[in-house]
Length: 379
Image (cartoon, rainbow, N blue to C red; front, top):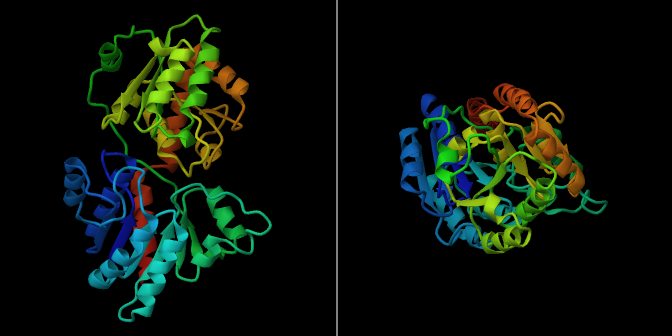
């Protein structure tokens, strides 16, 4: 079986999704199958080497993207059609949020004749519940004319697909999952690097610095909370993007710039999480976010606003807290409780790691993806 996996990512770091792709490749290689990933841009050397080591061949779709977050959806269509005709896969997977370009590519391949792959569309962003009209007319419903199977990464996404008229039998649910990781650096390295005291409580958030991720909400929460605490705390913002300058300005305006550290794009996120005490996240829209899953595997609790799979990933009150999207006061209160109570942080962190081990290990997800693609290929 040969699977061609289209992903508009430009892999500039060795992250959870890149690791998932390599692990899927290892499952394919064990079975004597071929897994080919098509990116929007060339991966950095460590990612390319990890893919190759696990039997994954990778290609770049020309014109699809010209930088992180700068994709050209309709430029996907004709190069994708040409690539499918050349590679002749049994399964063509599209991990790409733009439904109409995906439909156009699948229909053009069909009209061109010759060997026909089975098409799988995988959820790339949060799928909101449809309104009354969306239950009957939507891009996802139209997409079903060219796609054989759909993959949702959380239950809310699966239910939204069903409400749009996608048959349950055509939907698989496979949550975003990550590999186990043992820290390689000595305890305390991060605090020493940043000049923090050993007892400083380290809060971390990870993600692109774009409006949807709402790091401004986190800055406002930390500023309001800070005046109520007697212990020392610092916020680390891991990631980069166009929002960095205005976020830095906001931190200064709120008077907390000395406690906020912009670490930029990092390849050692899991080493950072291993040294942190609490994850915070306030995105407006997510699927099954890797940031939360990585914090679970690191054994730290999370305080997040509700989006995507947050309430599936976090058992609120046991492994962290999930607040309503705009509940700033609740967010401040729960974060303050965790910062001020080391024993609670440790107990919740233990529960979070147990939940990751039971539900979100990458080996389980990779096996299920391989099984799904094989089932689709032989249908």
